[in-house]
Image 1 (tube, rainbow, N blue to C red):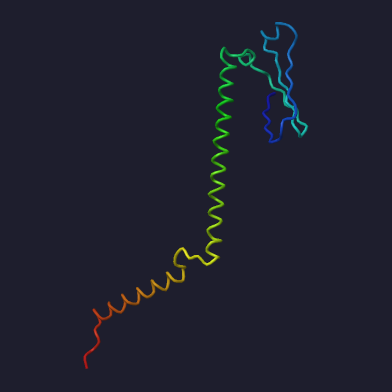
Image 2 (spheres, rainbow, N blue to C red):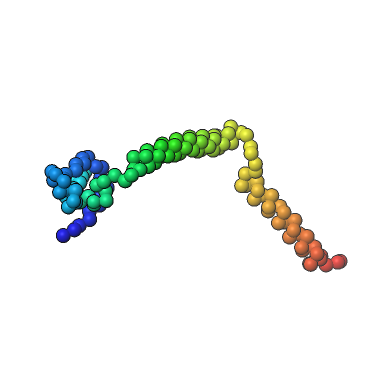
Length: 134
């Protein structure tokens, strides 16, 4: 019976087990026991292909680690730049409170549009509905 269990807890121990001697490599009797902080023990059978290292495995893994270290440095720099940008955006509303106006408020914009509308309305009335002559 095979059952797949997935848990979101941290691994606290790993241990490999294999039979003594060369026959374990031939029969694939290597097991991996993984314990997590919830007290669950997971036992996995290690496939034969993973028991022997690939020809360039060490070099490939070293390159991958170097790449990840560079990527982490880049991500940290971007996080610092984003934090600086966010702090600049936080300062902008504070500057407005100090009395520095950067533009019209919503009320001023609404008043301006209302005046424009009233002017257009009066021109429309004059053009299409002239006052009766007395």
